[in-house]
Image (cartoon, rainbow, N blue to C red; front, side, top):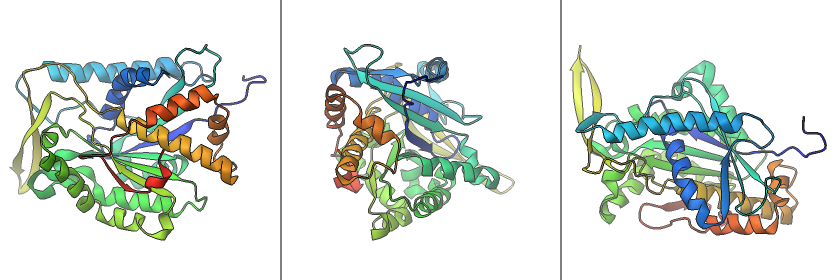
Amino acid sequence: MLGNQQELKPFRVTMLGPSGVGKTTLLTVMRKQMNSAVDVSELRLETGHPQKPGTGFETDQLLQKCLEELEQLVRSRGYVAQGGIGGTGEPKKFYFNLSKLKKNSSSAKLVLEFQDYPGGWIAQQENSKQVLDYIQDSSVTILVIDTPALIYRSGKYHVAVNKSEIVQQMLLKAYSEDDSNKRRLLVFAPVKCEKFLRTPNEARKIEQAIRSGYKDLIENFNSENFNNVSAVITPVQTVGNVLFSYIEEIEENGIITPKFWYEKTNNHELAPFDAEQPLRYILGFALKDALDAKRTERLGFVNWFRDMLGLDDDLKNAIKKFGEGCKKDGAFVVLKGGHLLG
């Protein structure tokens, strides 16, 4: 029961990608690194929806379990196949709320809702409609990409591993069938990319591979029909001390199955890097969208606008400062819609 308290509408983000690509891993390391990143901007990041009891505990419990699995992965020695953590068995919502660091518990808050789901759903007719609904209901979609599959051997296994053809069709369908014209942000998030960020030349390969591997999607988004869409590339080194090594091709009954192998460094610590960058882009986009909506009287489109505009100036300024930390060089690229970002 909320009583006289106004309901807080969450700002929705959908995690998109097939099974095993690293959606839950990305969310886990984002949470880990956001803690230190938001302190710099005087923001308090807490788990849970303030008006939904138990969501904080549930989010903490799920992400702590995933974090322990990742730490165990890094601590083990030698090579590891695939790497990462087990896939999501059922759809899950992860809630976070942002408030000013030095305010009290009743201070203004911005609620973020991250929607995760079993990656296999995107290829299942009976469940893909629900994923489409998630995308359409969300202002932001984070497309998680397996970088070794995207780049190695000229992307030989990109379509098979990243399900890029299905993902492109799904995003185009979700966005083109939505006539609300609300602004959207698509975050291309290459993960497991540690090996490919060692030199500027290697980093450029990530952008080139995304432009090639998602060519149809990017070309469509550059048309006038998608002027409301912004797209960025934000690579995330999800583990830090586990590097892609090689692909072993295993043949059985005439069918070749790729097995991805990763090598540990001498540092057996979980050390994600740039994991907070997607959130910086998301918050910069959200704040600018809300302020522009106020000026152009678009408030009726999305309910969370009212909550964003109701935030006190201290919190809005802290969010703005945090969003200004977006990287825009090297492998970090604004593909389109830079005017929609903070």
